[in-house]
Figure 1 (cartoon, helix red, strand yellow):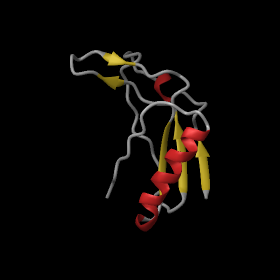
Figure 2: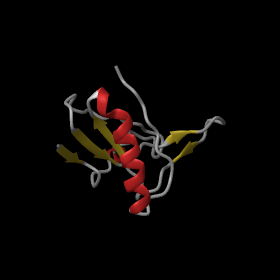
Figure 3: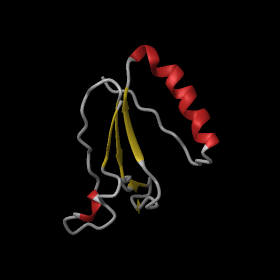
Figure 4: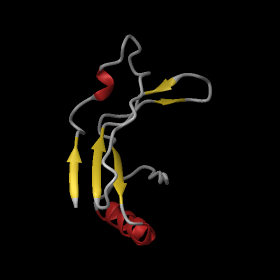
Length: 95
């Protein structure tokens, strides 16, 4: 497994005049067993306001083989509970 962490680097600090409203689409390597960590992007609320995520949040991208996906999700959720992690986990499939 390869882990590439840029979590300590605040990508959104380059906000181009729009602090807490700039989103960055992270570049990742499309390889099985590759993990990349980022500071989270702010989110736009339905009313148009922006919500800056806490600095201790993290976005993580996993690339894994399709046949391992469901068992990985179960193991990840179990380990997250053991580590005392809280918050939602959003799973997104990309082609």
